[in-house]
Length: 187
Image (cartoon, rainbow, N blue to C red; front, side, top):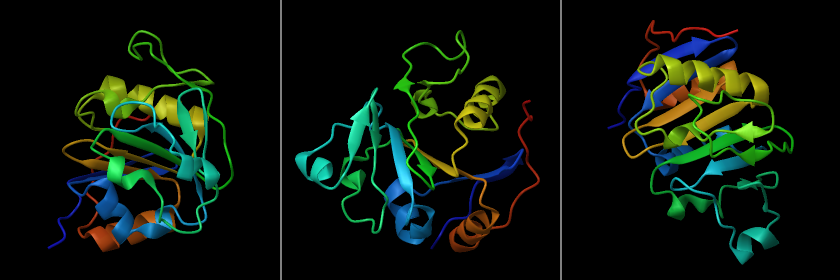
């Protein structure tokens, strides 16, 4: 049985949901979230994604602690077997370089262009439960402007997208209806 999203909401042009599914399950149920797109992996099991020779041969690159995929025409070859929780992916329609992974505490040094914080590594980060972290997350998202964002912890998966059609399909596939729960907006 598919469990419904546990929380949903929106911030600016983005809508989000949190579900008990993990990343491999989500992609099996919603492959169109990635097909034809490019991903930037900012965390793989809490650290940098170490590219294998097969991934390099398939067109993956790495820069500044971030792994970048080629345009995805299929989901075979994604690093799903290495996803043990605390994985974070930004999804784009075109190749996009983000800069470097920041090792600074985001609560002390807010997001800035070219320095990316892996929010998935803030244990049990939820968009609604941690307003100060959520505000900083939304600030970083406004700087990066991805189409979508996926973060998989050991307990839940967060999906954020500005593609309303994709969000509606994900909600329909995952079950449940959006709740009227919204995080504080940032400017």
